[in-house]
Length: 330
Image (cartoon, rainbow, N blue to C red; front, side, top):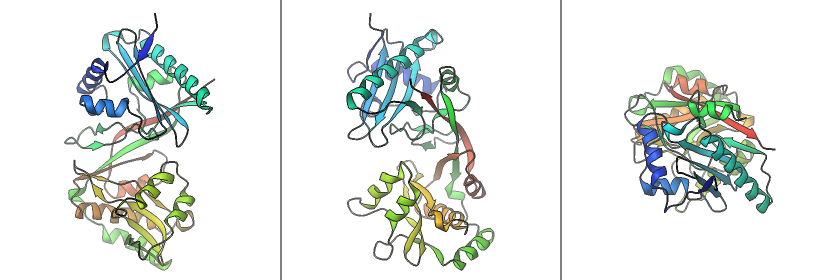
């Protein structure tokens, strides 16, 4: 008998129940889903050219989802769920082996390289999760596998190796106050170099693509140009200006329907670092989100990223930690 078979919209009801019960039991921080949201997240390619892999174990006691990202040409494991009474019985291992086998076949047919299977924040299948200790505050993308969880241990026992530790940060924006006194020395250093923080104005500012090229970030390489070329124009955004030339950005400044201050990121051109611009820019971003009516902000960054100190000085606290992990494929 075949050990696994495709998970589809017509046979997904048990998988949805399995997923939601795991969330309700607190085994995962992920937000429970409706059937429509489950189909959109796990059974629909995130964008044109991507490919979704989703399979049930033969008796529907577990399922697995993964994706091929057509932009980065990387393969991601998104989720494994197994019914509590059947864990440690080989179902998870069977599903993982089946996923790898199907990805190998896909890679051969598409003539792309399948050398690693990854669990990380680069996964285009973004699972919304709820920050523990908050009033339902959410973040739209899990940063990997939760550090120290059963899922993390499962992966490490099957050849996955951690390549980064990410901390998820949170701030109650309604209580944020711009710390003018403590930022005075940073502002002076910026001003001495001729740098200012401004709201982006396409009539006055130029050079965003040059900044993107300098940053060379897998996600920002397409996210920022897409934002700049939005129909109707880009949304409000803060930039660091050197006489009109864009040498840093933060934004867009967009409170979502749940009150979260959404932004793609914050970055400074490599030739303009060391002047305190990132610290001043980030605090201006928090202030603009408060003015825009956001209730809270969330973000994640690597454990060893010095930028974490900027966030912590602004009042952000860690609410969860995650491992980015990957397995080398033979």
